[in-house]
Each structure stands twice: as structure tokens, then as C-alpha cells.
Amino acid sequence: MASVSVIIPFYKKHLFLKKAVESILSQTYKDFEIIIIHDDPKDQNLEFISNIKSMDNRIIVLKNKENLGAGFSRNEGIKIAKGNYIAFLDADDVWYQNKLSVQIDFMKKNNYEFSHTSYEILDLNEKIISKRIAQEKLDYEQLIKSCDIGLSSVILKKEILRDHKFPSLKTKEDYVLWLLLAKSGIKIYAISEILMKWRKTNNSLSDNTFQKIADGFKVYNSYLNYNLLLSLKCLFILSLNYILKKLNHDISCNTFNNPDSYLFK
Image 1 (tube, one colour):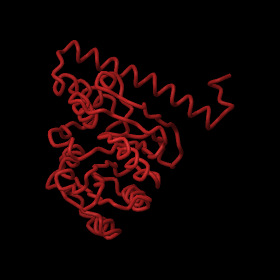
Image 2 (cartoon, helix red, strand yellow):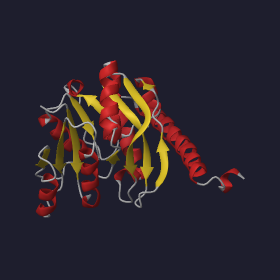
Image 3 (cartoon, helix red, strand yellow):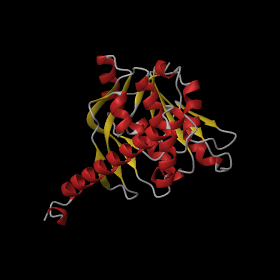
């Protein structure tokens, strides 16, 4: 039985999926299985999926009968996962070679149930345009106000997902799950080392501002059962913190890549 089950929802990202899978197969930690949930029933490129599956006998492919979204697809993957740990990787992201080794060792030594790491943000040309440094420890109250947890950096003990799952949201479905887990008493710990690369794509739902605002309101109002005013207040604080941190991270990254930047003249 594999120690780690890696869950990958896949929808119209043929250009990147192979690289994502290769980044798992190149891990120094080898005790894993890969569960890919194909969430595009209209995709007739069967040869592509077959080629991905043939890359390694630890790869399992499920296909949804209809497009159900990333959150539902992850839930389906978790249902059949055999690992004691669940790791998430989106189809357009990649891991550094030592990610599983470092993170699983970190969790086992400290008996942690939830961990995540720092990560870099790439553009479509593989250029690093920013980075996010993970906060050492997060609790529920902190998470309500701000969340920089990169989904593809997260590893959880499978047992903590017995009573919680991803909701049916187009964006922020991961944020809801993190909040519900934190509210139940699960502590969230981080590794400051950068172990993952998150790819910023032009057609990403996470770049749709209106969708993010609508789903952000649902996080507080529908899933945490906050009243209208409190939901709007929390959404405002979350959005403000996101903007401030993004400006700070982008400026820092710009300085690192371009010391002569006019931002500092």
C-alpha cells in the first residue's frame, strides 16, 4: 500500500499534465500512487490519457461522466486513495524533486496532520514572476483574514478528511476546506522552503475577479454561516490583505530579478 496518494484533477490542460506527472515520478521519495481524475467527458483524446497512464504503473485514471469541477474530482480521488497521506497537485503545477521527502519527514517527525510549503509563481514561459513564503503556523482566526496556502503544496493525513470534503465552488473550494479543518481544531503548519511551482495561466478561474468575489462571499455566508454584514466584512479584509501581500511579494520579486527597478528609485 502506498504511503502517499497524489490527487490531480485534470480538465483541458494537456499542455502541462505530463510535466506535473513527471515532477511526481522524479521525487526522491518513491512510496506513492498518482490518482488523476479526468473531468472532461467530451475529451476524445484517448491516446493522450493512455500515454500518461503508461508512464508508470502507480498511475490510476478515473473519468467523470460529466464535468463536475476540481473540488468534486478531488473528493472522488480521495475516496479510492490508499495512502495514509493525501497530497494535492493541480495539472499545471510542478513539484521540486525533494518535496515529498522533506514534507513527509517534517510531518512524521512532528506528528502533524496538515502541512504546506512556500512556492514560486511561474508565467507561461516558465519565468518566476513572484513567490509566496508560507506562514509558520496558522489557526482558524488567522485563516479567516488571510490565506496564502498553495493547494499544490498541501499534504494532509487522510484520516482528517473523514468528516470534511471540498465544496462545489468554482474557486476557493480549497479555502473552504482549510477553514473547516482549522475550525475543527486541526493545526496548519508550514515549511518555509520553496518546494512547488504554481503556474499562472491566462484562462485560470482563479484569475476571474468577479467569480472570486462571489465565491468569497459564499465561503463566509454559506459555509461558515456568517450573517450578511460579517460575511462582507470578512470578504473585505481577505481581499485587502491579498492585495497588500501581492504588492509586497511582487515588488520584492521584481527587486530580486531586476535590482535597477525604477520602483526603488
